[in-house]
Length: 251
Image (cartoon, rainbow, N blue to C red; front, side, top):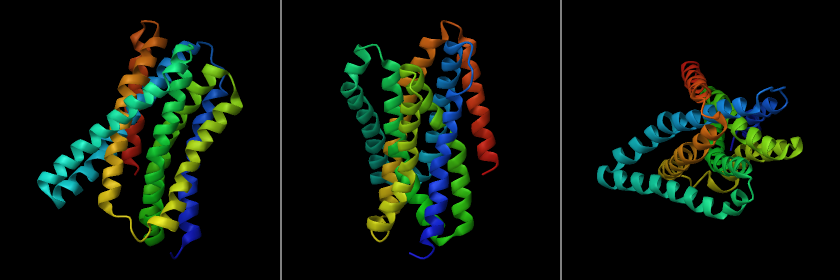
């Protein structure tokens, strides 16, 4: 592919923006429960909004326009598959929760889910940047803006469950690097065989995972740390909505 280095660099920068979320673990927080409740509710609403307004519409309409009936069926099955996958992963991580580390489990789940999200993002950014530089930059900026709260949703739970800076940084970095990994996969294996239909199905599955994780895991954890003070939850949700709207306006 022409412009390989350029496309790979753009994709890598977009992915590494996730690390900005790590900054929040170095802030001197007086009320940890308040901070966790706000940041977790913030992360949950951003995940939901990204899924509803970014991942689902374009993928769904592409599949439906290609074939109305089968497109709808494939979309529903893909979305439900994402929900089932996150339920299955909860069973795998159940032992962590039994040991009293539900916050740690949440951070790990977020990292895994966001890696699944970031790999197709990396593929899309790489392929687009390699063929259309301006469009590639626009997509990269959009990804960077929503990668920041994604970094928060990984780093904050990991840090406050283990108080290990290195573990929080490493876990967030692994998720961040999944985007350039997507670029490498695209270049080596998928450039000639990847189709818009396959990417659409993957993104719908990821949307199902993210919405389920946000509602059933992250938001519940936010409520737990709110200590019956709902204003913390509402504050996080409001900040997340405003952040998302701003990111949509400028991209």
